[in-house]
Image (cartoon, rainbow, N blue to C red; front, side):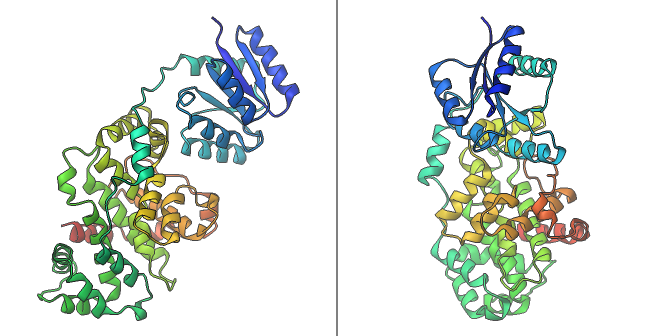
Length: 407
């Protein structure tokens, strides 16, 4: 039986020409001009592959993502037709990969090129997808996410102020309300790197100063929300310690990038940027293990593998957790948009700063974020003129701080 290809092309004449050529090659072809018509065709008949022009209304990548939300269609291979201009094509590929797409064809293409791509796509074995309904429902309903104790939320709010506005007495008294957190903070203060030698929290806070206390307390609050990392090492798909080190280092890089800004949420933004991965590792270790297998076997980014297998990314999951914790909008945006800050509708500059910090830390190879790839700089982020090389110079200091904070 001939393989059926659904052609989604905004120009009916071009779509008809492609259909006629494919039929000459032994394919069965069906035409439509937009995403709505494509959904109708997919409901009406079985389709083996989709060729979708990125120039259709609403865009090919966005349309493909919406179609793939339907369980029936998320295993059908979709080939995105790329614009001929090189930079535009690269942008579409990046957007497509971030949304779990892996098949692209540069326009204008020859019949032989199209035939070769379709043969390649149809011959490949489909990825065995785990059941993802549970994951989506867990995150949607927020029924199984870590809680943020009131004292911890208060600490994050107090420490987000400018240095001169932080009341250190409030910080020490709030810390003392939580013995476990207080012990963690005091242990870090007494480390060789930070050098405090006393026993009183108020003395430690005064000795270290606002900037250092902010870093220690914020990291301890986040770390404690998921319990001791060692508790999850046996089931996690990759070492939690590696994720925490990567996240802390991104927070430190954010401090350097945002040192001239008055508001002091930069360390928190950086440290939380991959918090969705912690949710996946702790709550869904088996599913996330399959994501890591796909990363390793096909050299995909972890973002792309997450979307292909789970239908949701760590950025989406982290954004839900930020809402659950009632964190400020700028924090949620930094989490959800740090891979493509230029596409964010708000707090774009902060998301771009996190994007740059993440690239710098991946370049330094501090910790592990789930794949060894260094992302390409987002065009909007490059306009901020923040130097990755300047951040990389702090590698040894970042590593020492991570050792002191994580113990």
